[in-house]
Length: 144
Ligand code: DQA
Image (cartoon, rainbow, N blue to C red; front, side, top):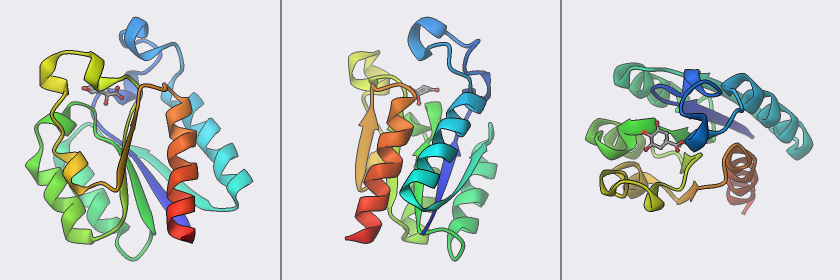
């Protein structure tokens, strides 16, 4: 089993970026957490971050044949990108939508998600822990 964890725009700045909203944890810290979690679950994992929509779409396309599922924190593209939703629907891999913050408790424009329409489930509001929860959920889904 191999899972792709894909991070979208501005998540490279975690730790410095709006720490009141996103916490002090850096993306490198989160990647380390995920590596430990994947090891404990006995699965393979790739972790990447891209700021551009096209690069994220290319990564989703490339996941077909190389990965069994995608965990996607698409950042603000969550709320705008029909193209990312279409990419997920095109590759027909199970996807989990993930956010550090509880998008439903924030501005109304964050309540809408195109990614959710192409996802088996959504995890948000648990900070970095959400990445571990998403790995557990995806592993269980792939085993069932
Ligand atoms: C985010 C939530 C998005 O609304 C926001 O644009 C982000 C981060 C999160 O992880 O909480 O960039 O995806």
